[in-house]
Image 1 (cartoon, one colour):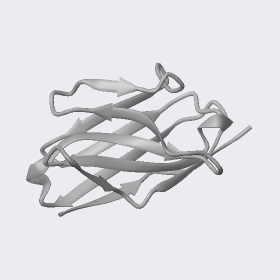
Image 2: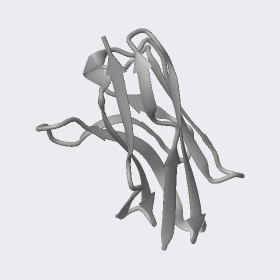
Image 3: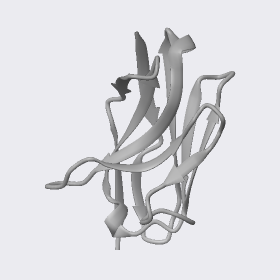
Amino acid sequence: QVQLVESGGGLVQAGGSLRLSCAASGSTFGIGGVGWYRQAPGKQREMVATINIANITNYSDSVKGRFTISRDNAKNTVSLQMNSLNPEDTAVYYCNVKWYGRIDIWGQGTQVTVSS
């Protein structure tokens, strides 16, 4: 199996920036696509950004141009640089990996709070 540990969440003012990181350990050989998802109170979990094994990225329309996802396969990490944050970005952010193409593995989540 794979274990994921997220870091980098916190409280920031609107217009500010945060960088989330996710470190994978365990059977990392089977990791394919990775991504970040978020869940705000009372809402469903939604995709924020994904990056596949060929480094092709995909972003939700709400974060396009503000967030950047990247991965370091040698270090088994994936990061999310978040700029121009606004209160609508407040949520718990989860790291996700696709393991052997079909198994979803999730991190424990990290809280991001943007104050107005």
